[in-house]
Length: 88
Image (cartoon, rainbow, N blue to C red; front, side, top):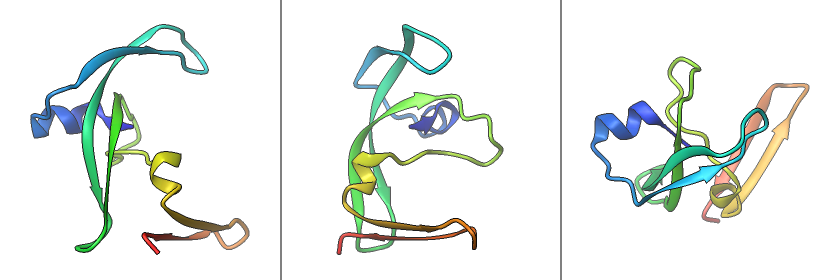
């Protein structure tokens, strides 16, 4: 998901409008956008993302399994740390 404000500021054109269901709503109209997430100068992932209001300050996007399935995510809950290795 990409914050609605981010795609608006970047001027990215939507591919199409779709309806989704969320835990609290049904038939919510959102747009799909072509996006590329760059993780460093060498590695990027191109996916189709939905726009959504992301009310957490400073949050521009959420990555999902379509990105995470290209690498390995290790989460250490007690330490509150994670390591994401992509493209390996």
